[in-house]
Image (cartoon, rainbow, N blue to C red; front, side):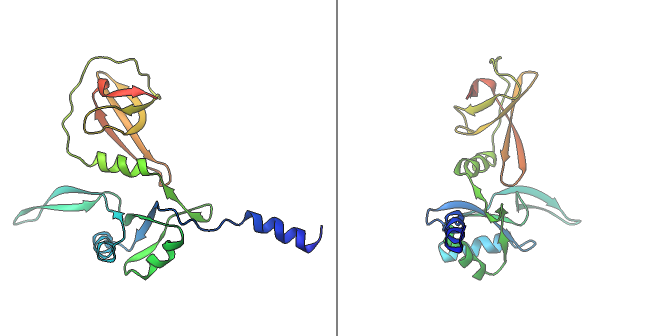
Length: 182
């Protein structure tokens, strides 16, 4: 094997960064998620910062505040080539990588987070033939479109939504008649 054969074999392994817009995880500096989100907004960059509302109590008052669901993380929809340009935005710490490449978050995982953060009240409904460990999709209600793994507990169905690229999981109770097996 000569040098040209070796170089061409190595060149075929290299993959050019994609121009297709996908969701990526951007790490922020500590407690800078909201500021980074505002800076993305000003720059016109599509992003998503999942937040929830909680009540904090001080000695003299109570206050509702919005907190990030995942600390130091903002999701950004951009091309892989444009990721390096994000470092010019103050507060960015880095991009989540998997096997040396920027890790892509699937669009349905972003949708699952959006659905998860809606306020909903659910009730127990009649038995449906779904076993623990089955992959299911929610077909109606506020969680419609969510895909998850089912766990049966008495008369309720629990969905576990896992964001695989980040190793973070969430669980949500939904009526059994709201799901179908995949």
